[in-house]
Image 1 (cartoon, rainbow, N blue to C red):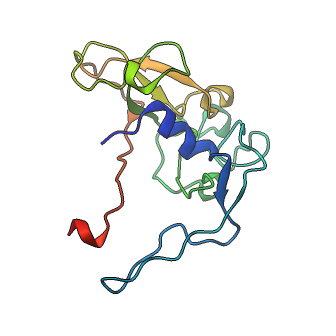
Image 2: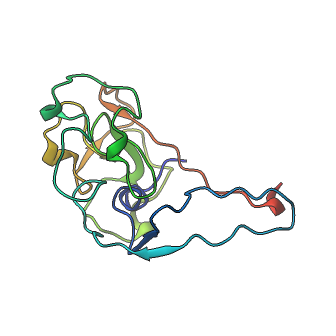
Image 3: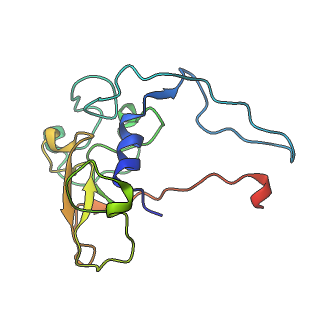
Amino acid sequence: MLPSEAEWEKGARGGLEIPGEGEPLIRVVREVGTSAPAVRLERNSFPRRSYPWSGEFDGDRANVFETGIGRVSAVGCFGSGRSVYGCEDLSGNVREWTRSTLGAYPYEPSEREGLSVSNETPRVLRGGAFFSLSRRARCSGRLGGRPARRYDDVGFRVMLSPLSFSDL
């Protein structure tokens, strides 16, 4: 499933609390019946961060116009630009589809999360692209696009819900 606009933004900025320094982002439960230890959370010092990393724009962290590459790069080339959740390339490279329809933001999820709308209904694109100025690749940057059309600078990010052993 595609993330909603709000889920995409939380993945980029983090929430009010984020995984603590050095916390593994994925825990593996090795035996049925055991539970994974809780991830240690700490207060997010930068909940309104402009980019997925702390601080100002840095051309070593995102593929945008100022970086000078001029085309899409392989995912992970800008590892120092990861979000607090370990998500790569949320700023620059390609814009990303969300399942949210375009309109004023923020909004109540029930208002614009409908998946049964027309392919001509504009959906929200987030993250900026390789030719975007850095200010358009901020966590708050958003545009609209129509799913029925083709764009050379748009991709997608799949969102998965974790499974528990009771789901198997």
